[in-house]
Length: 579
Image (cartoon, rainbow, N blue to C red; front, side):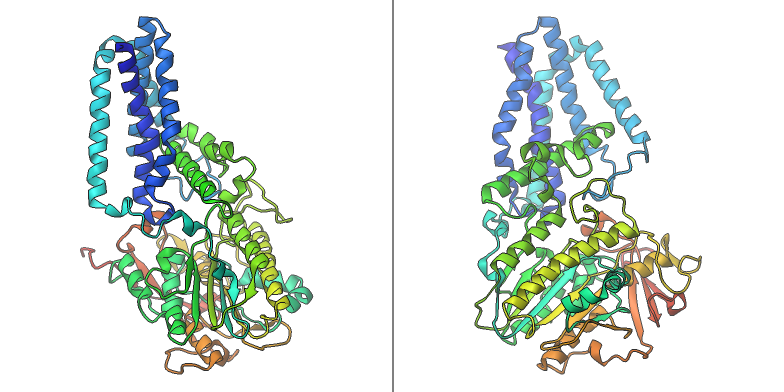
């Protein structure tokens, strides 16, 4: 009986680390990123946790008394190591989105982890007689302490356990998502981080094909975004509000959603508004149907729950194992548990393929059955890194992020979206619809730009970012097809901005002339226009930050691709900064 109790107490800490404390820490720091309640995820761990508890405990019962003491001492120290690694030795590896981790960088992390693990496990083997009497009470005491900490955090952040807006049923799109009006539609596609110069290269390399596929469109090759990432870009072009580091970021986004947004403006004019995007950017908006594309997409509610639980378990293990083992868990996005639990469908754990599957579903189920005019906003990430497809648009591993590989994936994404446009044609909806293809921002990262001017020379640089990086994050796709517009794809040099979209839609629909700004179609191709771009260095932790450390405003007067058009204007520091 003593053997059983001590073995169970030592194994319990290991099991709680993997199936409770690890997942809780990950979830509480990324509440908005999960579509499934934490309690649902944890409930799926009950059976595997019990199995692991037995597998770790039972072997010690068959060992000699000395071997039993050594084994249980190692097990108890392993529980402590998992906790230490997951809470204190949490190294930063960037976004775990399949773009690959350069394991040759900061190898000292591995040696630091290895030294700690080797030292404590060696102590467990050498001093097992002193450790063994402390195991039962010590393991239970530490587990209780961690549970109390979990309860305190839960009390401070009740949203961790909230199930509002996180029903499994929400992972399956409503039929209305695929329904259009037979007469009047505004169809708004956002292709995340699609740069204008790459789009121009793609279409000009096969102009005959794309001119026909994008009939009636005007591509504005000089369009600029407002911010370098999604966080502040979306509020800027949907509401016209520009963030200047004066109020907390999350508060600003919520205020923008509740303001005079494009969706609200059209909703108030009789449009049914369908929003397919992150809840972060649609909360507070009026909508007929709202949906966030599930990853993985397509499947039953049980399959969604299993896949999300597998993803959580992978992240928990990744966080808690030492550096040299993380590579085995991550495996360039082919995560260990996800790969073992669903070997045939692991590609759908990548956002690219899930968003592509959503478009396939739209092509299959598209219909014109709505009585009112429809505004449909669809934010896709198939053009966003990581690079996961080859030139045949098939899944490929370990593709480096280069200008050419980004262009290949952009082409695959564009061609897939064109299939949706072709379906609209076959249903008689294309001609009468106002269709917008845009990026939310460009794509920086130091990729080479095939542009006029010498952006790579030293000069303007902010926070370690060269002007080349800043300019490439400002250059965005913007192509618009007005209702009943005909003729081949046109390429315009007009100096427009994404913040012109609301006024452009208003002008084309002829419904409201009170909106500030200009329609993109009223900007002359030879007109030199002053536009503004706001740059910040993005870190993943900025999703939870209150302010940016600095926000720099640039004035662009001329081509976005000409270094001489750029002028730094001012820096907005957070109000909390002490001078």
